[in-house]
Image 1 (cartoon, rainbow, N blue to C red):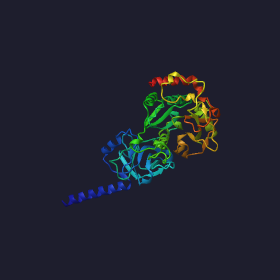
Image 2: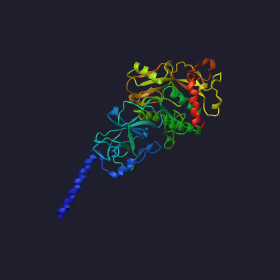
Image 3: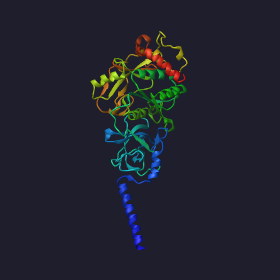
Image 4: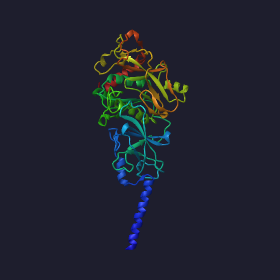
Length: 434
């Protein structure tokens, strides 16, 4: 009996020592089957995942090879309530490769949080939560306020696990979120068809809400393969602002999370697209001295080989001023809701002592963090592209509404695409059911 007791005691001691050694290394012992079930759960269609024990949100996770393989979790952090956060990095046996050295194993480590400098004074800000663990090649990650939390967590798959030097797309447009039942279908179709004619192969839209006609158009372009629609139901989790100034448009987060969508798109397409265009749905980055974006970027990249950020000036084409000829006032478009951008060919002049805001063409592998009009963190110099080489066609309400038509500049650049553009627009409208 005494020998059995001593043997049992030795076993308990051995188990205790082993457990302590696991915890010291940050490795969390866990039931293999239970962990497999947790990691196999499909990611929620809501896009957002609440960080346990906090008011923060996770969006998506990416391996950043420029940071020695650290995992970057795109997040939305409540700035004044930031507590210590922990990463739980896991290897899933169905996704692990030879040499991982572990199956269904998790490691806990302290997280490093970087709240982006641009948050416009709103309580929540776009953030990067960094997770590192050299002991495993993680396939999934979660964030928690507790270092030993596993069972109650929801895990994000880690993307960009491998670097690539060839890309599926040459040019992709990242369009920040649709909201407010946006239903400007005609302008959207016209813009999409112009995009394709100047070399855009892919468009990404973050959709909070849109009207019924735009919904039909989104389905058409998604089926065509040109468009990826990312669900963005931010209103389920926060009270987003409709603007960019808290005093005028209060809320938890700037402009429906615009900054988060732009940063998420950079990492989502880092190894899918050679270049990204970061602009709004009613803006077209248009080359004026080159036939296509490909020709433009070949020239700019030769002139500036160390640069991966190219700032493009925004110029306003007032929707209140129309072409007098009526050349593009086409009867088949009258029943389609939205602006007809081909009718608005007058551009506002520069304002004295006012710098035109910019949007960007970027090499995503040379940037880390972006704001709306400028890049926050990037590698190499940012280049301001001359207005006569490339600028944005932005049809919207005027900023200088007191000007008469004869004080505006005539700009018919879009008309140069008439031969192919008109039939392409009509085909897209017909196939969308409009």
